[in-house]
Length: 320
Image: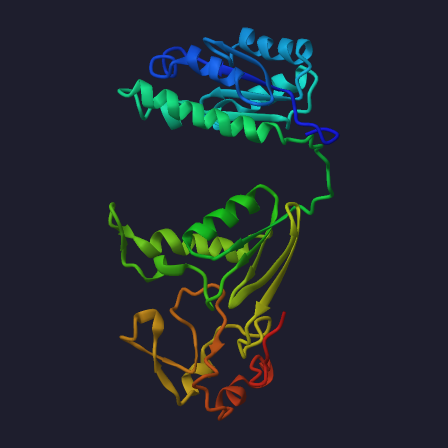
């Protein structure tokens, strides 16, 4: 819509060979399009995506002084870019274009019902024209972009995504709410359908995350808020109180050895025990202990055992 006036719309219907024209009555659809309010031009062609088809669009834009274009054809995933470019080459903003999918949404699913397919195509086209009458030009713009990425969840899928980003030279923050990465796959003995050893696949990937220079691992952390927009997101992350200073903990396990509290280990589905200060399993990444404050009695035996390393802080709070 320009200057408060409805757009002058041109409609172009593609036969798509027989994919559309073999079911939908294209000529009837073209005649119907010409009766819709705002439509000043309606045409059909065997292959609208071809060079002659695109020329029809460009010529009509200039000769009929069109303000917007509707193409009734196949899926936008296939040729939306093609028709936007044709619209632009015709002298219009590429965003005053709308596509009506009458192939996947009508002709292909009603191959034995030409009458119903045609009526449905009319409905789809009418909606596209109604939208096109209100389209306004949009302009692309460039914004500064920080070349970093965040992957939320460090199961095997998150690990693989983070590694691919990091290998591409992108600084990647990998966020995991549990004390260790690996997710459910780390609990499996074998993987289906090959029955390969789960840890044989996962452990090398976990180790690579730990040492990759472009991956910043934030375990025992949760995303609290996401602000901003594509290219410039601001993410607030809660670092849950671990009770152990990661930079100082060497994973020796002396603290767990003296801890008097024993609890069912969630990693083992409660079948095995763990202490109030614990690691889930021997292959954890990062190899840092975590205090279960819900069951810690704060006897400070772990603090004393840790000694000069001073890696344990029983007063630690969540950080953002």
